Amino acid sequence: MTADEQKKQVGDAAAEYVKDGMKVGLGTGSTAAWFVKALAEKVKAGMKLTLVSTSIQTTQLAESLGLVIKDINDVGVLDLCVDGADEVGPGLALIKGGGAALLREKLIWEQAKSCIVIADAAKNVPLLGKFPLPIEVEPFAWKGTVNRISDVLVDFDINMMPKVRMKGESHWITDGGNLIFDVACGAIHEPAGLAHELKSLTGVVDHGLFLDLADIALIGGEDGVTVLHP
Ligand SMILES: O=C[C@H](O)[C@H](O)[C@H](O)COP(=O)(O)O
Image (cartoon, rainbow, N blue to C red; front, side, top):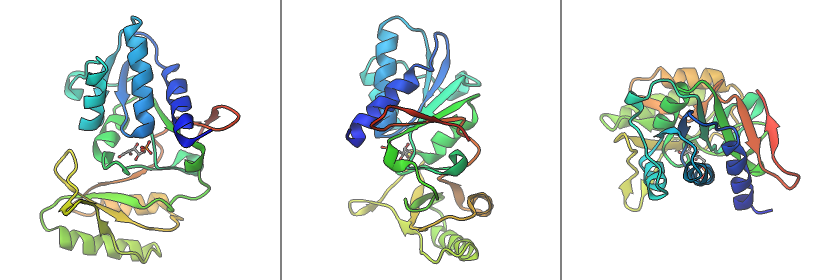
């Protein structure tokens, strides 16, 4: 089974957790896109849902499928959020942000009673950090912020410089108007400590470590969907 087939498998499986009348957050990326497509089928078949989105990209996809996306500020607490990840580690600690949507994703996840992460088998890892950790940075005075990020990384035995994400010749700009820096950590042995220290820096808007947020992981694979709990 290809990675894309696994992504569809878990997107469809996650849609089964959605019940009529729910308020649901839609994640971002190629895996979450399968979930959005599966939900669109349910809505076409008559299911009533209130939907919010984690990115412009997902809003455009959802609307192209006939779904209505509400403003998160008009919706209140969500019943469920379903989203992909770049890595799923022990305790369902995650790296997210490969698609640069981490800030709005985290805001939506934190406003949901329950969060399901969906991923193909290759993303289920014993230790986080092979996938570069995305860090969203306020553009003003970014050089100073990046120097302070580097100091924090050294404290965690990560001797890698954050690399600014590019889109062609220009800096990648997030939906919120910020820069993204990627750090090839290699291995993150203390995700909680690192998350705390990064978040404490002025200029760091947020980072891609999602800790203690996922309630369930649905992992694709040859033998069907594996359900993981923290
Ligand atoms: O910013 C993007 C998100 O965190 C995505 O959920 C993550 O990058 C996984 O994306 P994909 O399902 O395309 O691998």
